[in-house]
Length: 168
Length: 145
Image (cartoon, rainbow over all chains, first blue to last red; front, side):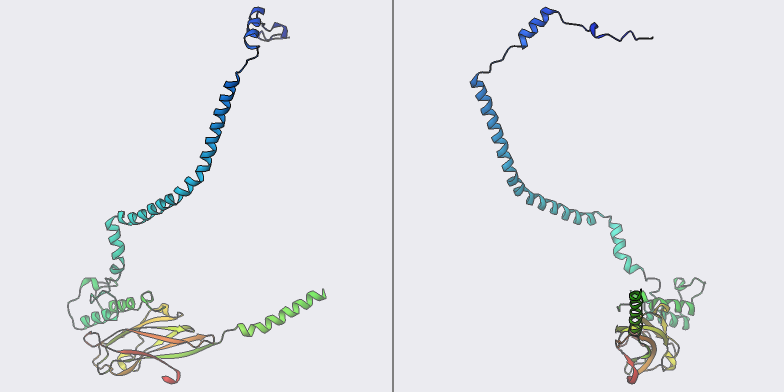
C-alpha cells in the first residue's frame, strides 16, 4: 500500500528540550503583581474617558438641533440658486426660439401682416386677386404654382381652425 | 335556488325601471347669428360660437339671409360634432348688407335637460376696403329669431 513520505505518526512529533521548557515556564508561568496605585490610576483614567464619551453623546443632539435648520436653509438656498441659474445658463438662442415660437407659427397666412390670421387675411388676398394687384409667390398656399381662390380658401380655413378658439 | 331566482327578478325589475331615467333627452334647435354693423356695409366677419351651459353638439352650419352671405361660411369641419366653432365669411360683391342681418344659422343637438346658453364673440367685422368696423353679434333662438 502506497504511503506518502510526508505523513507522520504521532510519536514522530518534535519536542522542545527540557532546559528550554523550564526557562519558558519560569518566565511566563509566574504571577504578575499590579501595584494598587497603578490599578487605581488605570481605573480613574478609564472612568474619565467614559465620562467624556457620555458628555459627547449628550452634546450631539444639541449640535444637530443647532445645525440642521441651518443646513436645511443652505440646501433650499442652493436649490433656489440652481433653479434660477439653470435657465440663465440655457443657451440664448434656445431661449429666443422658445420665446419666438408662438409668434412665428402663423406668418404664412398672415397676408395683411397684422400679427394674427383671421378672415381679413383671406379677404385681403381675395381683393388683391380680383383687382389684379401684384401677388407674392409665398401666397401660393397650396403650391400649385398660381395664387387663386383655392389659396384664399386655405387662408380662410386657417383663420377658422378650432385650435385658435379662445372660447372654452 | 328560489332566493337566487328572486334576486335575479328584482335586479331585472330595477334595471328596467332605471333605463328610462338614464336615457338622455335629445332635441335639435337652430340658432341664428345676427350681426349689426349700423350704417356701414358689412363685407367680412369672424366670430366664435360656443355653449356656456348645457350639452350641445353642432350638427350643421348654413349661410345668412343676404345674397352676399348666402353661401355657407368658412368653419373648421372638426367643429361638427363639437360644442364650439369659429365662423367667418367675406364678400367682394358690390351689394352688401348693413344694419341687422342674419349672417349664419347654426343647427345644434341639445342633450339633457339643461337649457343651453350660447356665447358669441365677434372677432372682427370689416368694410369693403378691409378696414375694421364696429359691430355687434347676437345669438337668437326659438321665438326670438
